[in-house]
Image 1: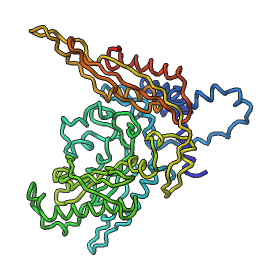
Image 2: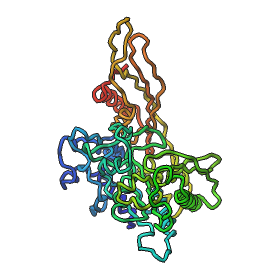
Image 3: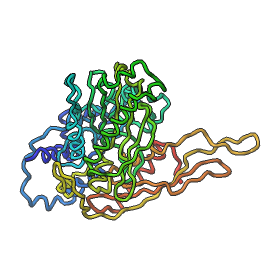
Image 4: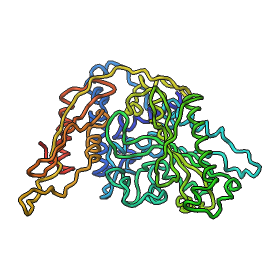
Length: 475
């Protein structure tokens, strides 16, 4: 059995044997983790289980399958680490079930293939300076803990306290000061402090986001950092602010960054790939840039990057050095290179998907049966009736509605059966000042046809949760 097949069996343990996890103590039987257990055996989340139950008679005619050898789960695939009764904890059972899947480490998976090709390119860029201290080649970090501190994820990167990325509506918190990393940049300061001059970090990251074919609450990123040799930027010693930004040394770093990343694009998409650079903004780099490539008759953004901000280097105890950093999404590149139309496919265990890919090869994905969608609408008031003002007009109440909270609620209830959510109507009542929204939820399984009955049951659950969890009033 290949390592890839063994891992696929490993991932099935979570969905097919939740009670085994309870017996082994991997999922403590607390109230939050009981929800995780219920989530795993829900037909909405694991339809294959429900189907196998309905066909138990035919199964009885077959020989028993080989005994499960009991492969171990991924290093961080321990739901109890992420689910708790802490008031700040907003991680759902669906998200907890994704942590530790390690798609980027599967050699025959599109995410793993892209990760390997990128690291292969950077490992070919070894330095040969006479004063090489042994740390100029890119060090690889592929298996770091997805739980980081707010200091690592935000403060060390100069992300201000009021930044929307810190909001619980955008970020999955474990406690008030720890969270599931929202980007692999969260490990940058740690590795700089440890003395590494050039490194790549790859891993799964988590963000609460909209629901469509290109967005998923868990995805994978690659972070790259390189500090230039001190002798190459010695003319910038003592410079800061505009003096540093306008120096030839800063321009040298910018050129090295752009040349390196343009080479990466040629490595992935072929030599001569048309590229263009746009000025961008990130709190942790200055100047900052966005790289686009011209592919399939359109311009596509592929990564963000820049010269590392002085403040980030100072916080990492590397204020005497200068360098660059970049970050890119592996799903974004894989969807382009493999022509994969739906981001949910990366998480499927369907062999019709996995059998199409082999380590080191980029091939075009061939769609298998596309099952019909089921559409359901839901409409609700997001604000209660306001108070009457001095002149008799109504003022909207102070209640707020955050769209990401609604998206996360739907995803946690219906799992990957939700293909897309779109806002189809919104208005404010002219007399009461109340705001209303109507969303269309598209349900579609990648593995089977859905029935109206099962989707109706999910829709009723979502309606109940909207009233109970979000405080919305259904229309």
